[in-house]
Length: 296
Image (cartoon, rainbow, N blue to C red; front, side, top):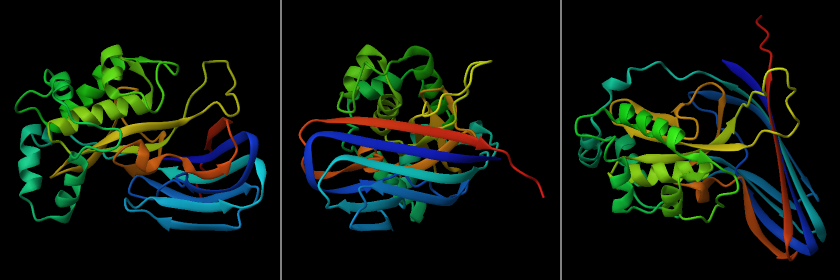
């Protein structure tokens, strides 16, 4: 169990004036079986004339706001308090063999199985191609439990792909990520989703935060954390389980979940439309601060 304070600051600086803008933010950590979000405070400058919260199609908490004052800078700061809980220790070898999952869920009448089928389909950033199924063929051999194989896939990406923030952007095709074997967490997650869905395994995209630890003897720099992304895979008799291909492991209590979707397009932290502005500069600062738990 771990308590965190999360501060996520986003600033847009425009070369020209923006007359007004409408925005959607996925920055509100979820409350579910592995974490509790106790509070979230959102501050927007300039102050919105309209703002509201609602749940989206995937159950994420979404913040809508409209700024109608003329401005050249937009700042959004979200502060949240979250308590995470470790995932249950399960024998991954008990999970269903991967090749049996799609027949089971496609013939099931259970709501959770039926709902998982949506995450077998292609989506905006996740295309299904033979080259992606070929990529994981050596790992997903017949009879291997799906969670065992998925962990091996995450470990393979971690060991064989280079984390390089300059190699890609959000519009870089995952075919390029596969060929060049470098990218960032979004790229590695999209690649794994494409590979898993190409062999008809339900897999979804998770966005959130990961606590980072500075090197020994070094102070943690303010604003040095970042948003993170990983994947979740479905097994009919065990539910969803999360894996991080960027770090080659199952998620632990250091992970804070913000939103769940088919890919990045469903859960991007902040997006919208604006009128005016011209070119812009984006600055993002994230702090994930572990707080001491006081036992009563």
